Length: 315
Image (cartoon, rainbow, N blue to C red; front, side):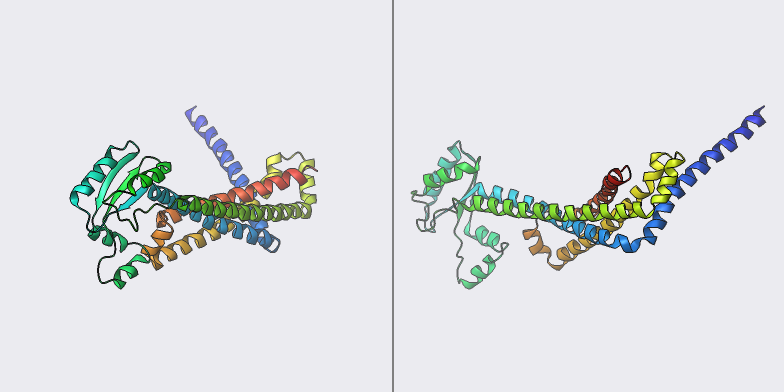
C-alpha cells in the first residue's frame, strides 16, 4: 500500500513541475523570443524609455543633493556670525556673549577666534585665495549665534549691531534675502526638472503603448484563436505584458549603469568639490539610485503594456 502511495505521488509532482515549466516557457521564453524578433520595432520605445530613466536617475540624484543643500543652507541661515573688533576688550565680548545666551530666542553661542576663522575659510571655495592675497589674517573673531528660528536672525542682528565689541564696518553675516533667494532657486529647478520628466514620461509611455498595440495587431489571428478556444486572459495578455517588462528592464539597466557610472566618475574626479556641490551623494547613494531606476523601468514597461492591452485587446 505504501508502494502505491509513493507511486501515485511522483506522477502528480511531475505533472505540477511540467505545468510550471511549460507556463514559464510560454510566458517568459515566448515573450523573450518575440521581443528579440521585434527588436527593430521596439527600438523607439527602448530609446525613449532609456532617456527618460537616465534623466530620472540624474534628476533624482540632483534632487537628493539639492534637498541636502537646502538643509545645510537652512542650518547656516539660522547661525548669525557676529564679527568682533580686533581691539575689542575681553570684558565687552564676555558681556555681549552673556546677553545673547540669556536671550530666549538664542539656542547657543560659541566663540571663534581669528585663527579658527582662517582655518574655516580655508575649507570654503574662493576664500583660500583671499587669505593668501593678504599678508595678515583678514578674518575676524566672531560670536556664532545659533537662533531657534530663522525668523529671529534679523531681530538678533539689530540687537547686536550697536554693541561696542562689534565691528562697526562689518558687524554681522546677516543677509535678509539670502535664504529666500536660495529657496526660490531650488523651487524653480525642481519645477523645471519635474516638468521635463513629465514630458519625457508622456512620450515614453505613448511610444511603448503604440509599440504594444502594433504587436497585438501583428498577432491578431493568434490572439483571436486563443480567445476562441477559451484560453485564460492571463495566457493571452501575459506575453505582451512580459515583453513590456523586458523593454523596461533593458532600458532601466542601461540607464542605471550610466547613472551609476557618471556619478562615480564625478565623485572620483573631484571628491572635495563634489561633496560641496552635491552633499550626501555617495557611491552607495548612486547604487541605490541605479537600482531604483531599474525597478522603475520594469514598472514603466509593464504599466505601459497593461494600458495598451486594456485599450486594444478588448476592443
